[in-house]
Image (cartoon, rainbow, N blue to C red):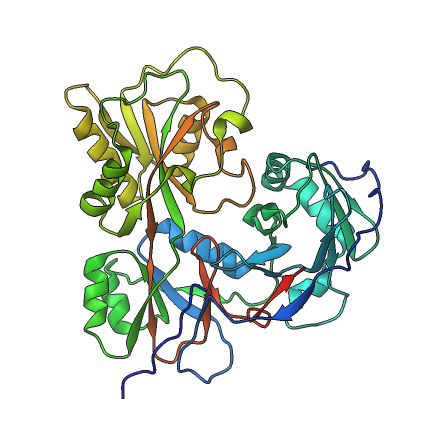
Length: 407
């Protein structure tokens, strides 16, 4: 019998000395209310929740899934950007919209056990000791974090935040979950994901069209398109000469051609509004000395970034450019120094707050959106329900994924 159809609808830190909120909110705190489970991947399984096994065709997808499964941020965002309770069960802003109060779960067991073991003071202390959390908070304009009592944590922003700040969903603010991991990576020894498709994992996440075609001819599997979650960017260091010869004036057709002819994964052209972050706004003025490098640098493990970089070099003609893939540590160092003619990198289509990504880029760099991509989930019959998050990560569905908090 074929499996029933899957339903998938894309439907700093300075703790301690903080000002007290100027006044109570004019409206009651938001509460979780039922809504359609827009980003659930529902299977034909009636078995209770259990850890899922998964294989990935790239380390970035695997890393995002690992974080989504094993860490919990104050707020969760689904694939449509709708918020749902994470560590915090309620949140609200005061009348100035500069002071946001996160209300944590009471110290008792609940649908998600990890919630009840955190107090406001413990969470603030954890953020204070974590450099990545501190950077994320500063990038979002957070001026202070003040525990009011065991359950309430007040976060002060430099400017009003009329909508729920995306930084509350940032992975950098997530804390490690206790107990059994809910994601077991099951990469085939051969390294060939066709073996994974044939022999076992609940989930294979890939953008490779050949693998997707292979899976479509195997029984007991269903393919689900995940949300458009990644945007690929050309970063041009401010002091460098740029890549004028490689980027034509008709950027709309240029991006469409990249999506159509260069990228093997499912892709579509990005537009200028696809990336709201801004290195020019978020970083200090750049140094005056440009890099002497003639390389277009990309993450070595990212096949899409490599293909885009190679195409840009080809379009630049006899300009003496080359492509160079770097491992994560080397890439981070080169980005900080601006040590390349240009960079091809990717980021979440919806960053978790302003400057969340661009603080790691060359000071004052210009970002040119190129293409957006999405992966597909190949799900095996009998897998437990899954859910897609804002950055394309897929994890086991949990209580609360069928509801979001709304004002």
